[in-house]
Image (cartoon, rainbow over all chains, first blue to last red; front, side, top):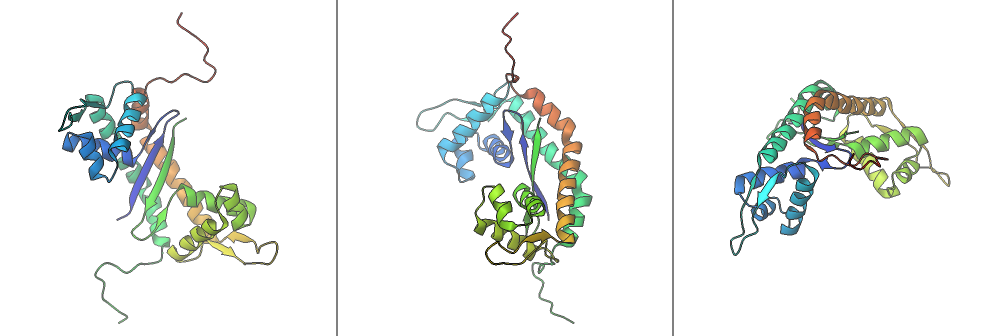
Length: 122
Length: 122
């Protein structure tokens, strides 16, 4: 299945698959460091990306409390939920609209062996 | 102006802004190495990307003659012209369709200083 990876370059900010996935994992895990770990990302990088998003948007997207031993926990704010949903909408809308052109490109590709295709000529 | 960077992930191939730009520069310069140079890309990497595209598609996208001192020259085949045009269509179609959602995201960004905006409060 052909997929689309889509990066939105605003004038002074950027939103792409990495940040969107990080937001999704923070929502699911309730923790910035756990979310980063699930993406093979260092704690520092995950925090940096969250800071970048919280700075770029009018309202912060992630609310967190730096905690003690167990970490402080984090969750998406309403703005964070909305940005994540809108990013998903952008990708879905873009893919649906571009699908006919993508199908034309697919038809130009060399046919690859289908998974499990054991047939030879017959 | 918000832009969209878009990477198409086929089952066994990938087409994104880098390869599309490389095709465009090859068309404009008639040379793989000159095209690579314009993108700050090594000769080796430019050739590798061209090989990747020529292998992925049924018909090669770039036709080249390895030449002597001056290099052999290269040009887009009809398939190359078509893939480049279709990729441009995909990006334009995706951006047009997703524009309303992107506008909603833009409205959530912190207002940045406009270029040349010298105004304080008044």
